[in-house]
Amino acid sequence: MRITQENISENNQSILSAHQQELDFLSGLLSKEGVDIWALIDKIKEFQIAVPSWALGAGGTRFGRFGLGGEPRNLEEKLEDIGLLKALTQKTSSVSLHIPWDIPSDYSTITGLASELGISFDAMNSNTFQDYGQQETYKLGSLGNAKKSIRNQAVDHNIQVIEIGKKLGSKGLTVWLADGSNFPGQSSMRNALQWTQESLTQIYTAMPDDWKLLLEYKPYEPNFYHTIIPDWGTSSLLCKSLGDRAKVLVDLGHHLPNTNIEQIVATLMYQDMLAGFHFNDSKYGDDDLTTGSIKPYQLFLIFCELISGSEDGAQTWESISWMIDASHNTKDPLEDLMQALEVISICFTKALLVDRKKLSACQLDGDVVGAQECLQEAFQRDVRPLVREARIQNGGAANPITLYRKLEVRKNLIQERGANSRSTGL
Ligand code: LRH
Ligand code: MN
Ligand code: MN
Image 1 (cartoon, rainbow, N blue to C red):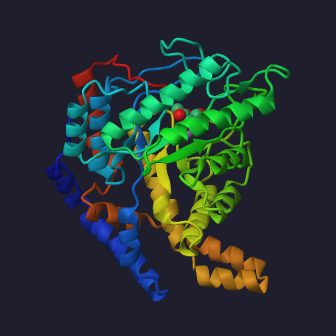
Image 2: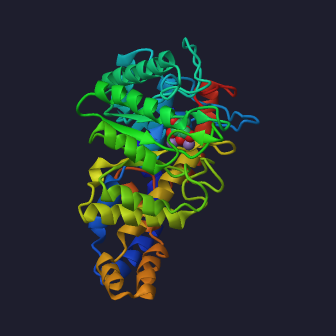
Image 3: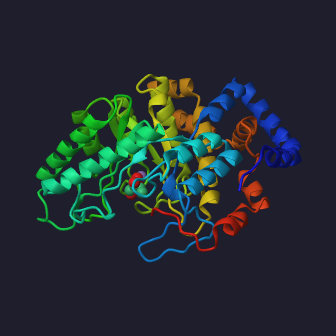
């Protein structure tokens, strides 16, 4: 199924006057405060977020999985789903592939379809946390395994992923390592770290010069005693040993509850070490809940750090990658992704509205209340008309989820692909 420009403009026409009223009201208020709303809208329009190929089907928990029907059965259909998201939101124009879940069967078909849909290939993800018919098992680890032959196999897999990515025009490799141990004594933590460092060096050396390596961390799961790369500090230490093109990837769910993620972002930017984000939200652990569904204020504070870090010249905005990493057990993934894209845009816009001059003055004067007021002033503002205007200007739907439902997209996908189609991946 494809969504046409006519579908979009016909729908937008019906709500244009209500939208215009809301926009006029908000721009009136903001203009009085000296905000250049057109410059703001341009920034919202430019901000694009990649979608991972594994987030287009139903996820599951270790207790079960409930299919939703019409799930993409192959990479082509995954690209088509991202095409639908793109048409509706104009917020996502790239896909991040997981190998071996999404090995292209035919490169020219895939690259042809991607360019027809205006989709590019974001960072590639390797997978050494599952057995996929390879020779030796990853049960006890991969890049940091005590057995050299298993480490070599995992390095070779990553090099293959780089080769696939080169054919697709990707410019990055994301490595998430599940390696660790489940019980004290099971592994030598120091040796495992060293082996990981050696394996990563081989992978880094195999990357083309214009690629970056994004190294993800996570405190626990699937290993519950120790994880080789549990935190941003360890990831950063490894990246520094590799070279300038290796940086730390922050997945919002990969922190123990109440961790100050905005501080981690600030620290990484201070060192020009932030590779990018995996957006999601979390109540307990790596829940992969919809971004902003639990802690939107935290997301806003993270964007405040990102914006101030880039405006102050600590690290360039362009050097940071943006992706959603979520799982959908009960929702239609496409609807969930639209909700995530919306809330990310909202928090980004609110952070752009912070009066940073005033905030800096409060910080210098020790005006704690004033500083908090600066943040609240921006956070409490309803910026949805700006986000909607940016989307309309980009050619997207004023109200993506409503239009998705009106066009009965899921019903159409079920007709095309079947009620029991199963997507590859998680
Ligand atoms: C690990 C992770 C990582 C994987 C993805 C499927 O928890 O966040 O990014 O590659 O999930
Ligand atoms: Mn992730
Ligand atoms: Mn995760």
